[in-house]
Image (cartoon, rainbow, N blue to C red; front, top):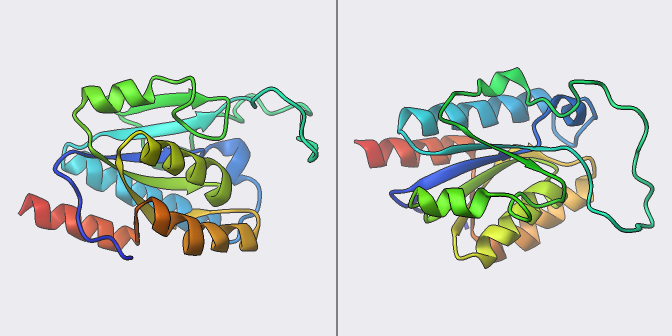
Length: 187
């Protein structure tokens, strides 16, 4: 279902748009994903709504069948991309698991701001974005997913999240549709 409404207190969460991750190819051009996420951030700031910028700086403990790259990382690997134009009022979250809520202050921050809905964008669609959306849904937030402001390294995983998982967690929409709803609210 395309996005129908935004609550009066909606926050934007941008997941893992950081230098070390966007350097990898995605199903969609990273420049477009970053551009759309930056447009969302600008619109949310314009309407004095919370913007949360999430980066990942590690992994959860435990064995996996898929080897994770543990080689040396550049010093700026976890730095957010400059196109997001981080502002002093933006809330930063550094995570060490797939979702942005686990072992972070994100839930407390959002509830302290009176937020009832979140819009999620970023990478990877089937990992950080989906996990954050699932956690938000489980915590009782209304969830919207900005489908043209996210991508994945795997086309099938991206398509599965967008077609089958996201409609069960909330509503989906494009950057333009979300910005238009913000503008209508502000009019």
